Image (cartoon, rainbow, N blue to C red):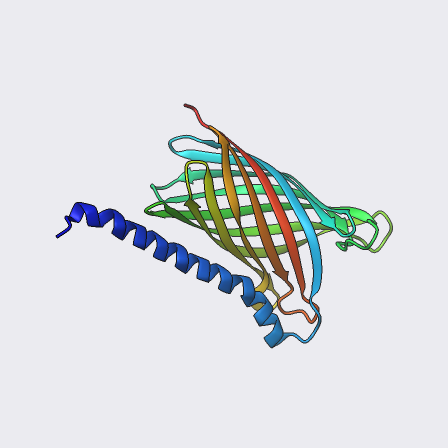
Length: 260
């Protein structure tokens, strides 16, 4: 009869495969669910856009605190046109225990208007976006599952009634994300995530706004340097007769810093 020592690694592999399989099925469901929801609730045509997000992120971490600075360029394909610039998003987090952390951040965006690839840029709108967030992370063998709850306020610049007049509109939005990371070897890992957005509207506590499903690969270039390439499907305007989907290629470089 085989010993328990010989059975354990096999059992662990079965558990990992089961978790990975469950996560993959969940990912496929989340990927197709926006289109299914549209077909059941909306009669309008889905507008489609193609985009590329290229970003650089610098992360710092010590025993109790962590922080990051993120810069990102977002452009349309077909035709090639600028969409937005993020410079930067700053976040500071305090470690509560081995799994939980909390913190706050601020992002500054420049958006082109109108946000349509076939239209010429008429003006640039600035946006200030402070937020609070709560992060929870757990490991099941090699699989990392991380969830994030973020509550943000958006102060978006709009054109006033008179030429040259600028105003800011304020909205509130909640975001919840679940993310999976599964190392394949020492350098490559599988990445998958889903993030759901809901905003506050008059008379409605939360109103579904957007869903982002993404999957791809992460690569460790050398110590403290990572590169990630992902496909992201964005579905917006759940309650609009003309919803929007975006097929997006996301490329991110991350530099990790620590006191050691």
